[in-house]
Image (cartoon, rainbow, N blue to C red; front, side, top):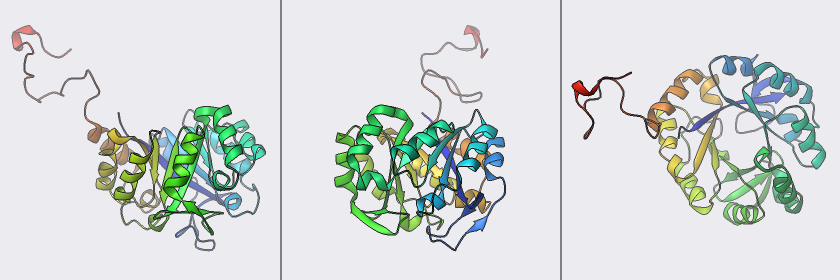
Length: 268
């Protein structure tokens, strides 16, 4: 399978913006990022309400709804400040294909387990960590041990996790593949990686973890900084995945052992 690319769109006061290390006051604005990523062929967008994540309230829901309507059939994964059933249902009602629960998974695990059970694939749990220490409340508070919480949430029925290495987020220093490999080994659920991707080679390194359960990669700063485009990234991931099962090699790849020679017919 091909690793899924999820370009990140962070919303602050109704506009797309990027923060440095998630710190309020370090933002840079970026116009209609969602529309640009969709036009380049993205199949998913990872949209974060930064105001809600920082406890300022859901200021960006109207904007998120406009994004969902504008980019369809591209699917939107909504995140940021989802701490109650009302928050979750509001984002699903806006048309989000999947909603990420973060802090609440640490502070209200019973409700999160119920939400995972009720909504299934429409819910993912975000595990934002500095090493083994989880971060909560917009990365302003510690929230326990990454692996202990991961095991508890999986036992509670959570079906998908998003692992963010906070120290690398927005820093263009490469993904934390060693820690990510440990996370993949600790769960049987699919995992999406976030934080640090700077080059196409970084994406190829993540693609190598797909057989271990990595499902996708969230990429933000590298796209905004022009390191590569969504089109470039998707081509690199498709190449790294190789031919789909049942597909033969492309033209010029040479004969396949056991296959008929030229007299047996060429490619259709």
